[in-house]
Length: 177
Length: 455
Ligand SMILES: [Zn+2]
Image (cartoon, rainbow over all chains, first blue to last red; front, side, top):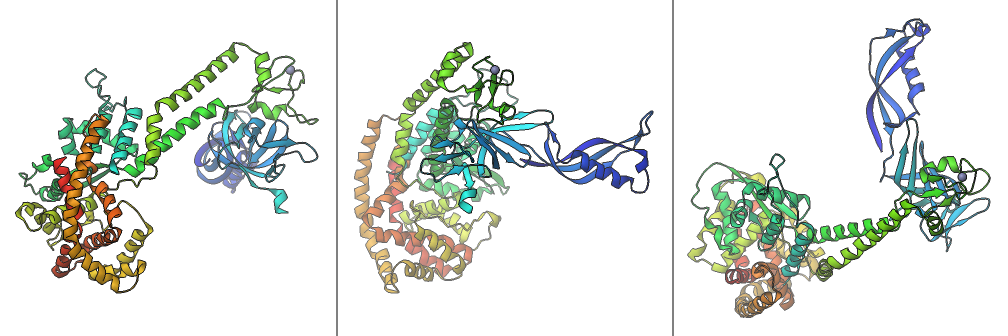
């Protein structure tokens, strides 16, 4: 799920950036530092949308660096248990398959793949129904439901299922070509 | 007999799901006295014997504190079993309702007339929403079953893996660390052994430790629960399937219901004096006297019929832009859509006026007999409560459909016009014409009235 929230961060800035465009430097450094990171609490920071305010700088003893508390608005993405996501399959093996929904990695184990889909090894390992009408392989797009998340300080990993109504392949790269 | 199966459904559902519901104010102490379990069932049962009812009156009937009742009703509103309506009204405005309730012959509701305050009071009304109850109960059962089955089949559970060499356990959440570039299996982090999925029964038995016993016990328990659920809720499920193809009773919204009920009583009594109160209330609403809260007058078309055919919807749509037309024009238009041209109108007029009287007599006799049969049947059923009070409207209506479907259509048309016409500001002329037609055509409704009085 996406959220638009306000976060705060203490930014350390080298004295050489002090000047007319100090603020711009601060913002560009913030973007570089924060966008694409993941915190267990808020999820993945997708993009910074605005700066709320920049507090008074504090000179650090000994180094000359200055710390600015910056409040910024950003879009974050955090997966939740029970959430339905659409994801792209990245790897298929006998144990199940891995998929990505943006920055989030999801594993779907083989017991959460419908029983009528069988694993086929080969160049392009895949799960296929007996009549061959549905196939999950690398680059397939699937809709899945998250049934568990592991949230570490800097990482979120999910496990999902496609064994439920309206879940499964939503576009088959083989069929499109 | 179309309300009765639904009422039975409500009663079964009430006992199955709401038996031990307590509704308490947050700040009330938990004492034995405030334990009001079972009230929910009582309220639902009471509602099966009524249609729209003012909540104060219901509280009085049930000897409940109105606050307590309101809490229960609010709960049921959230549970989607009950529709509620709130409106600010004068004592006079409340009379429309009183007249309507008199029309359904629930005799105790007359005590309101003494109050002649000009002050506006907010009154709340409630009514069972049978169509929705059917859906809600079905959904609830579906969810219950699904939850148990999912757990039984290990759906939605995190897969566990065991290393057969060193016995180390992993879960699917570790999957990212366990994949190996060489083959298609997961590998142990410490000994690089090939991991085995734990739900594979062999592995589970091999590792038969205490943890696993617990899991097996839990499975047994789940199975047991599922079986018990099937057993104990069987009457409810049977009732659901019985009700499945029946049209669910619709009372419409409060306003439409009042109009219909009052129209019925007027039709029943013709011009006799017994009917003064409803007449005056009608006059207040529609005779040109300005209503103080026009906002409440919803121009919603409610059909007394229980079936919702596409036809009805069409006629509603066709009507709305033509409001200013005299009602008989509208009727012609509607007949045109479903039957041939102008002759139909003539025909229906004839039937509406002449056939109705005879029909009413014959129907009345038949109904009395049927009602006796019903009473006996009800006794046999050994219900807690005498439930055939509210069988009337829809039951008889369905009958009528069977007997003479043609006239039924007309009847509905009349209803439509009659409700549509007043907001359009038609003159008394049209109004009168309408009124006659209505009176004739709704002879069946007047039977309902009698039905209730005796029941
Ligand atoms: Zn190992």
